[in-house]
Amino acid sequence: MMSKYPTPKPLWKLYIGPMVMAAIVAGFPALAHGRYEYLLDLAQLCGIYVIIVCGLTLLMGYTGQVSLGHAGFYALGAYIPAVLIDSFHWPLFPAILTGIIGTAIISFFIGGSILRLKGNHLALATLAVGYIISQALSKFPITHGADGIPGLPEITCFGLLSRSELHIFGMALTQPTLKLYFIWLVVTACIIWAIQLCESPGGRSLRAIHGDESAAESLGINAFSLKVKVFAASCVLAAIAGVMYAFVHASGYLGPEEFGLMMNVQLVMMVVIGGMGSIWGSVAGGVIVTALMEIINLTGRAMHLADTSRVESLVFGIILGLILILSPSGLIPGLKRLTSRAMNLVIRQT
View 1 (spheres, helix red, strand yellow):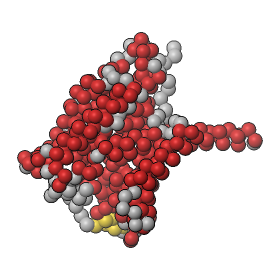
View 2 (cartoon, one colour):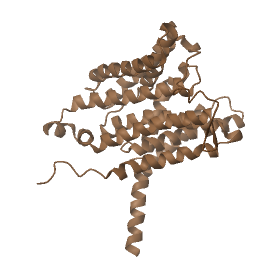
View 3 (cartoon, one colour):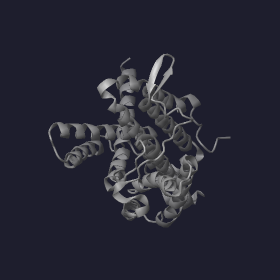
View 4 (cartoon, one colour):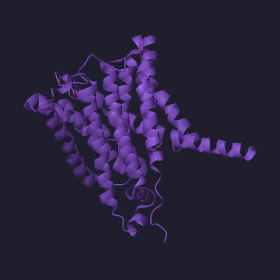
């Protein structure tokens, strides 16, 4: 009797990617010594964005639901615990847990309200939600408005991340390196969870909804319920990224400038460039877009440009155009197809 679902991939195929990624991150600090140590901060930021884009890939690439408001949920994950700590003197970990759970509850109700919309209407609704959240957080007195919240505690992992230097096997690991490892450990856990979800029967139900929602419902799949759950799950990943930003990367200060309208555009750009149907595309998109933004900023400073936002828009517009023309499914799926064709060509010639 044939199985209802395709045979799942062997475990080694699921985990070889995270293992390779972990090895690359482990060796990265060796390339970032001396005057290039700012690369460690950039790599931390890349990891934070990868967490958000991983959730967006599940929502947009696997379920087919567009969201232009995830920067708002990224902000909630950072601001809810920050306000609880700053204004109500909560301990760090209960505040963080409350922030993540609170974001999950808020996103569940918002998803239940807007996910009956389709196409452009859904995109505009999510954009409005993200804008309202970011504006509210930047205006309320309890969040200190544009001044931000200073003096926040940092996650220390039982004192491990608070050390200025840690010696392991004769190697001296600085505090930025330890923070980098911690953030990318969280990234790895999120990616493994996302891969397991995509390879499960639930993941195949998501792809069925993306392909034809009416046909999926005729097969007994509760499309609306599944979309709301995936929306909430993607918002939880955004909240986790917010926690990493506020309490690991930002060194005790949280301001609203990180969570503006352009952040929504950048996040969607990461998804599209990396590949909407690929979890590994979220890694590639997050790293490439963050690195390119930093390169543009550094080049702008060297050329004494006061504002590089127009240059960023031009560069990413060109890149998006090339990606959509040459590989509409994104960078990683395109590379997979190219590699497969090259291998087939080699096999035929031999």
